[in-house]
Image (cartoon, rainbow, N blue to C red; front, side, top):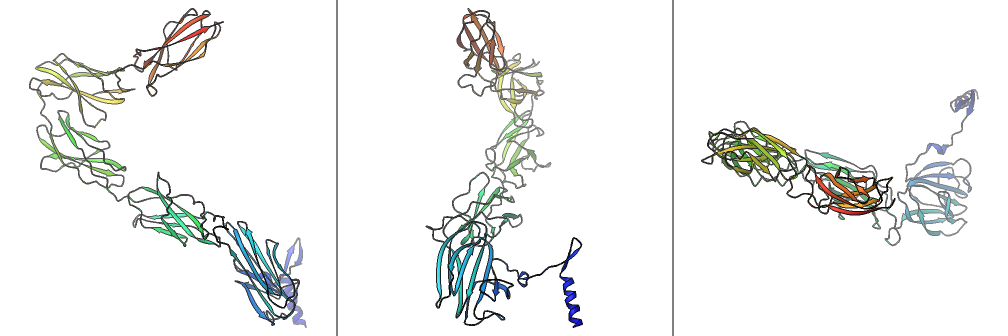
Amino acid sequence: MEIRSRLRSVSSVVAAATVGGLLTATATPASAAVSCASPVFKRQFFANTTFSGTPKKTDCDSAVDQNWGTGAPASGLPSNYFSVRWTVTRDFGSGGPFSFAASAQDGIRVHLDGVRKIDLWKNVSTTAKQTVNVTIPSGKHTLRVDFVNWTGTANVKFGYTPRTSADVDKVKPLTPAGTSVSYDSVTGKAKLTWAKNKEMDLAGYKVYRRLKGTSFGSTPLATTTSTSYTDATLPVTGATYYYEVRAHDKAGNVSAGTADQSVTTADRTAPERVTGLSALGTTAGNSLTWQASSSNDVHHYEVWGAPEGRSDPDGPATVFGTSYTDPVADAGTPYTYTIRAVDGAQNLSPVSDPLTVTRPVASTVPAPTALQGTPADAHTRLTWAPVEGEVTGFRVYRRTDANGAWTLVGSSAGASAARYDDTSAPQGKAFYHVVAVDGAGAESVPSAEAVVDRLTAATATGPAAPRLTVVSEGGTRFPMVIEALPGAGDEGRQLKGYSWEISGACGDSGTRLTTTGTISWTPQYTGPCTATVHAVDVYGRTGEHGSSVEVMVYR
C-alpha cells in the first residue's frame, strides 16, 4: 500500500503544471496522443451510443469500411450498444461537386464542417444505404462520420468521391503553387518543379513554354502526372524562354497558369555568315562595308586584313558597326579582307567571302588645309584653303563613325573651287576630309578631318505652312492667343519656331518669332486683323508658304 501510494504521488507531480504559483493537475485523454496524417481518418471507439466519455480506443483508419458482424469491434468494448467516430480534415483544393455514399447497420450520420449531410439513424435489421451529391468549397474542410450499433450485426461503409463528368464539374483546379526552374548550362536542360495540387479529381499538369516576346500557344510542351518536368529540347541560342504550369482535372477543366519562370539558355549557336562585303581604296585607307549578319545577337565583327597571300600579323580589328577603314594598309599593295560576326558568347560565324582592294599611292600635290564645315537647313557647307600646284579639283569624303568606311559624297572642279555643299548631310555627327586631285586623276593625302554635328538632316525644301488655331481673339486689355503647329507632312520635323506678324485695324505687331508655337499679342485697337505665320527651320530658313487667319477684336 505504501509503494502504490508513492507511485500515485509521483504520477500526480509529473502531470502537474505550475500556474500563478499553484500546482494544477492536467488530465490528458488517451485519444490525444494519436495523430493521423490527412487524408487518413482518426477513429475513436466508445462503449456507449452517445459518444460520451473517454474513448476506449483511438487509432488511424485509411477508409471507413468495416464489418464486425455480431462481435465486439475492439478489445474491451461490448458487441452491442457501442459507437465509432471517424474524423478527418483535408485540403480539397478548388473543391467542386462530390458524391457521399454511406451504408450501415445500424445508424450512420455524416457531417461536413458540422453540417449533417447524411442521416440514417435507427436500429435496423438490414443494411441501410444512402447517396447524396454535395458541393464542397475550396480549401480545408472537416468530415465526420458517426456510427452506432444498438443490437445485432454491425457494419459500416462511407466513401466520398468527386463527380468528374464534364456536364457536372465546372470548377477549375487551383493554380499550381511553388513553381521554380533550374537550368544546367552544360546539358542545356531546364528542370521545372511545383507543389502537388490537392484536388481529388486531378488528372495531371500541362507545361507550356514560350520564347521571350511571344505568347504561350494553345498546345502544351508536355503533359505529366508528376510534379516536375525536364525540358531537353531547349535551343542553345542564348535566348530567354518562359515556362508556366496549368493543372487540369478529369472533367477537362484547366487552371490558370503559374507565374512565368524564365530561363536564359546557353549560347552555343554561331551567328550567320556576313555577306555583301565591298571595298573602296582611298588615300586615307581601305574602306570596307558589309551587310549586317542576319542573327539578332551579334555583339561585334572581326575584320581580318593582310597583303594578298599572307595572314594578318596583328590579329583582327574589332568593329561594332558594319563598316571600317584600315588606315595602316600599305599604299600600292593589294590587301585581302574577310569578316566574321561574333556574338555575346564569343561564338564565331563562318568567314565571309574574301575581297581584295589596293590603297592608292597618293599624288605629290599638297593636301587641302583649314577644312571646316557649317550646317545650314539645306546642306552642310564645307570650305578649305586653295591648294598650290597642278590641281584640277577636289573630292569630298564623309563617314558617320570615327572608324567607319569613307564614302565619296561629291567633288568640285578647279583649283580655286574650295567649297562644297553636302545636301545629303545626315543628322548627328559626320566626319569629312577632302583630297586634291592632280591632272592624272590621282588624289593627294587627305586633309585633316572636320566634324559637323547636325541637329537635323539636310532638307531640300523649307517647312510647310503651319496649322493655326485661334485660342482667344483678345482685346485692348488682354492678348489674342493663336496656337501654331507643324503643317501637313511636317509632324515630325524639328523647327526653330514660327515667324509671325499681326496687322490691320487692331494695330501692327511687326515681325516676331515664337519658339513655343504660342503667339500672344495684345491689340492696340478694336477691329479686324490678319495674323500671318511661317514655320522656321532649326537653322533659320523660313518656309516659303505661310498661313493666315482673320481675327476680330471687339473690345
